[in-house]
Image 1 (cartoon, rainbow, N blue to C red):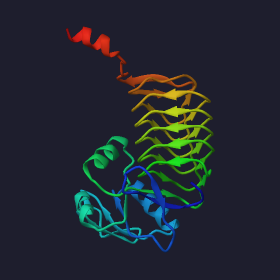
Image 2 (image 1 turned 90 degrees about the horizontal axis):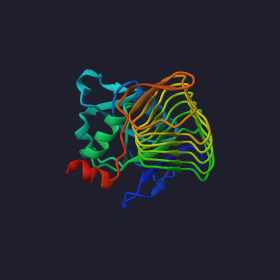
Image 3 (image 1 turned 90 degrees about the vertical axis):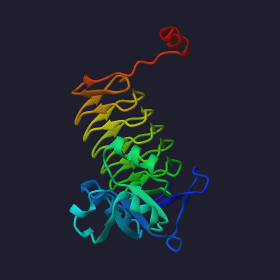
Image 4 (image 1 turned 45 degrees about the horizontal axis):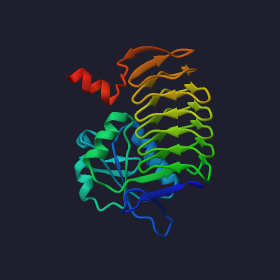
Amino acid sequence: MEGGGYWIESEDGVALERKDSNQRGPIVVLGAGGHAKVVVATLLAAGCEVSGVFADDWQERGDQLLGVPVRGALRDALDAGARGALIAIGDNAARKRIAEELELPWATVVHPWACVERDVALGPGTVVFAGAVIQPASQIGAHVIVNTGARIDHDARIGDFSHIAPGCTLAGNVELRSGVFMGAGSTVIPGVKVGAWSTVGAGAAVVAELPAGVIAVGVPARTIGGEPVRRVSKRRAARERA
C-alpha cells in the first residue's frame, strides 16, 4: 500500500484493487456513532464519495452524519448499490458479526495523513486513521481498525477484527491474533504475541505473551479477568470426550 486512498475487495474476495479518482464509486458506512464520524471523515479526506450511513438505530441518529445522509438499517445497505462498504463500529465482536451476516464489497481506506509503507498488506474492511504509522513487512488482517496516531513497527502481524486504539505502539515482530483490542496508549514490546480476543487496557505495557481471551492491564501488563482459552490437542480432546 502506498499513500492515502482506498481499495475495494475484488471479485475473488482476496485481492484488493486500488481505485483512482476516476474509478471511485459510492461507499456506504455501517454504523452511526462516534467511531463512524472518524470513518466518514477519513473517507472524505481520501477523496471518496460517501453515499449513505446505515445503522439499526438510524431513526434515533438524525438525518445526517458529517453531511452524509443516514438512510436506514444495516440490512438496507445491501440494496444501496454501493461500490464498497466499511463497518464503522469500534466493537470487534460486532464488526465480526456484521461482516459474516452482510455480503458486501468491503473497502480498505487509508487517511492521506497516515504513513503506510509500500509493502504493507492491508485486508478488506480495514481503516487506517490520520497520524497512524505502519512500518515495512507488516501484515494487517481484515476489518482491522488502526486508530488515530497508532504506531505499528516492522514485521507485525495483526489478526482480523482487531482494534489498535489511539496512541498505541506495537514494536517490531509483534503478533496480535484475531479480535484483539489494544487500549489507548498501550504498548507491546518486540516479538511478543497477544492471544485472540484478548483486551489490553489503556496505558498498559505488554512485556510477555498473553493467552487468548484475557483482560490485561498495568505496567507491566497483568491478567485481571477474562477466560483464557485452553489449547487442547485433537488426541487429548478425543480422550476427554471418551
